[in-house]
Length: 240
Image (cartoon, rainbow, N blue to C red; front, side, top):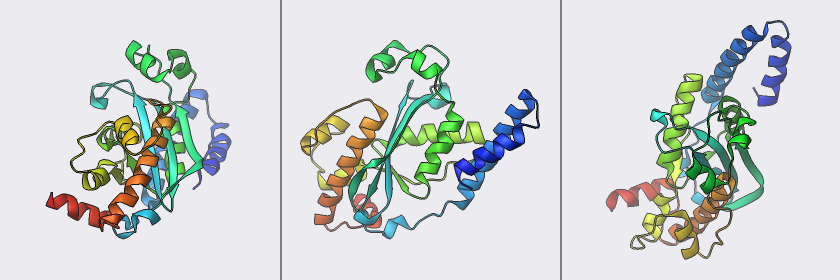
């Protein structure tokens, strides 16, 4: 079921319920919808697809801290698609996420996001449904992916009581093979090393685009070393 169809169905159903009943129904329907999306998720055998042919969504999240299990929350999500080894500039996703508390000053300064911006944004449950609808069956890619994975796993279970099932590949899997002695880990440092202009840093969509360009650059480098698929990459990493 597409997200637009789900929304049309919900508008029709909710008209027959009180406000409270409607809110509860919407929550239960969101859970059912996401579970159905997860059920229909085709686990593409991305391990054996040539890296440049693998359909990917490179994404980034901005958060209030590092520990979702301690109450830190997602405040924005940005993503861009990669097709045939190139970033697709006009296939992007970006949204702020509702956060009703005061944003920590250091996070506001770092991201340029204000508490007012977040109070007027849509709730995370709605944003995640839209994000997963954007991703569909594509492989997710992120820089330092453990951060993104932890928050999405936490949110998926907390909001929808369903496990997070998408594969997330870390950009480090490629640069650890192509530049094993480089010693760089920060996104901006790796971009500079690869002659990628660093702009819109610490903006979820800006960082997603930087990570996508980095991903594409290292696809070419790993191919030259004989690693053509994720399976090849994992085997090479296992020998390190």
